[in-house]
Image 1: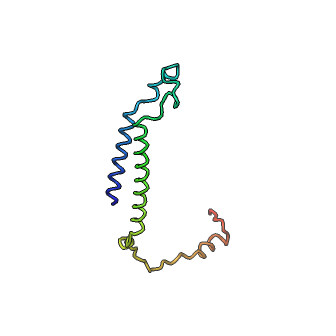
Image 2 (image 1 turned 30 degrees about the horizontal axis):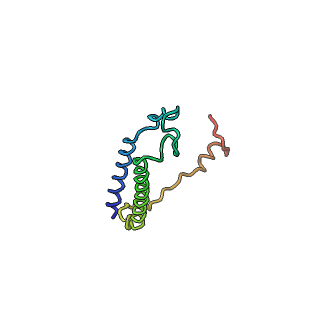
Image 3 (image 1 turned 90 degrees about the vertical axis):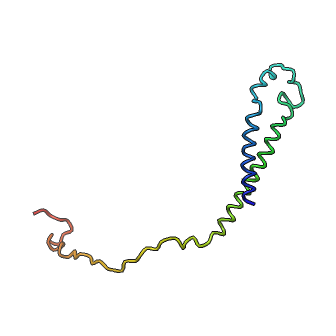
Length: 119
């Protein structure tokens, strides 16, 4: 099922790209705003919407729906992932102790002061 949704998603994306490239730009109708013949229509100089514009909107809706479908499949698959911690290596524990050096002998050589002096 996920593969079918993915194929429809890719086809919708390619269809949107193709339809946008086929459509005529708004700059091509610039003459209509300066008194062209179609400037007095009900929907303005662009008309009610071309067939390619409506088809692009349809494919955009299909694209968004398949996007939500793929996100749903991905979230369901992430919930069922099990046993991922079996492959994580464990660190060995070191149980030996290290003795700290004695600091009393250093304090006696400086005369009991915290600030070292140069002889």
